[in-house]
Amino acid sequence: MNVLVVGQGGREHALAWKLSKSKKVGKIFVAPGNGGTAKESKCYNKKIDVNNFSALEELVNSENIELIVVGPEDPLVNGINDYFQNSSVQVFGPTKEGAQLEGSKIFSKKFMFENNIPTGAANFFSDSKLAKRHLETVEFPIVLKADGLAAGKGVLVSKKLGEAMQWIEDIMEKNKFGDAGNKVLIEECLFGTELSYMGIMTPYRFYPFETSVDYKPLLDGNSGPNTGGMGCMSPSPFMNDELLKNINKQIVEPTMNGLRNAKIDFYGFMYFGLMVKDNQPKVLEYNCRLGDPETQCLMLQLDSDLLKVLLDALSDDLKNISWGKQSSMGVVIASGGYPGSYKKDQHIEISELDKVKLFHAGTKDYNGELLTSGGRVFSLNAKAPDLESCKKIIYTNINNIKFNDMVYRKDIGDIYES
Ligand code: AMP
Ligand code: GLY
Image (cartoon, rainbow, N blue to C red):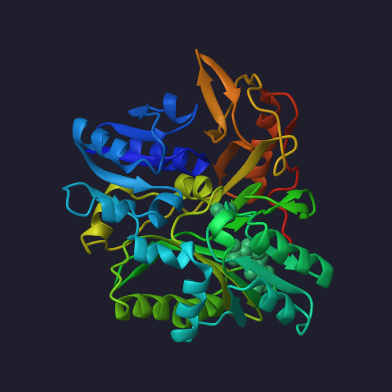
């Protein structure tokens, strides 16, 4: 079977790599892919934008593609599943309506309120004057969120009234995020330990993935600005039986019931962003995709055949997913300046790597030369009997990768409670 993976990050490299291990997979097309997917066995990059559905359709038809696996949220929110609804190719990922759980923070907050899913209290505003007036009445810190997708930058946790007022002005009056900021939420700030809980959701069952921890801040000690994620370890030391039971009963089951009641047939990845205190979880956000760099860790852990898992889930025939017992870890290597501005087109040197898997993200192949093309450039991953061994393997290899202004955290694998 030929497969199309949509996206270009480390997550998509890991998905394509794991799919390539499946005997039933023929060719894997990655649109647009990166310098790593271009070199992976069975994989072919196609320079097509993830939201250009008609160009993807041409590729699907000309290459006999039977399954599309969608990595990022944008094409899902823009309706890639709906676009291919009347064709024979199957799309792994929810419809436009289901993807609203991620695409509209107001939709998702209302969904949680209606289904009694624990989450922070929030008010919604489409008028900046009313939003500013409300800010004068709340306790700080407070959380401000743009309703629509804003490339992961649409949330501000603010301690000061002046800063919050400025945010409202930038987002609602100066349209910093375009239409995504026409409406905003002003939300109660939750405290505790953040936890990502991911898996595959179908209308009647949720299949959890191995647990994982994302290191969001840029710098060692979990300090500095938030990023898309600077590293990952799996399994998570923060999960326990009671918490798992609470997550399933209070969040996963009511989410599935709520989707069914709303007549939304949800088949795809689901990522619950949670805040946990005293084993009580509350939802910060839904994502209808997998995390990056968590996927890179998880694909190393996955024992099952990924193609079979996805196809069985789509036909309500998935029994279980089998995960290896070993630990898995990944360290993100980024361009200096990220998550702000950074240089691109930097020459990359890679010498011998041993016992690691290097997933590419912001790289491109330019006439045979590997160049940087993004903020997060690689995730260097290892699987070993324990986290200490993973850590040793990765940090021994990391100096064999070199480009100008390369940065990475030196403490991935350390445990930070909150
Ligand atoms: P979101 O995209 O909604 O997950 O927000 C991005 C990040 O903002 C989360 O990973 C949290 O670190 C933080 N955040 C979001 N909502 C809240 C909240 N209600 N209380 C505290 N932190 C939050
Ligand atoms: N690593 C966090 C995310 O993918 O949203």
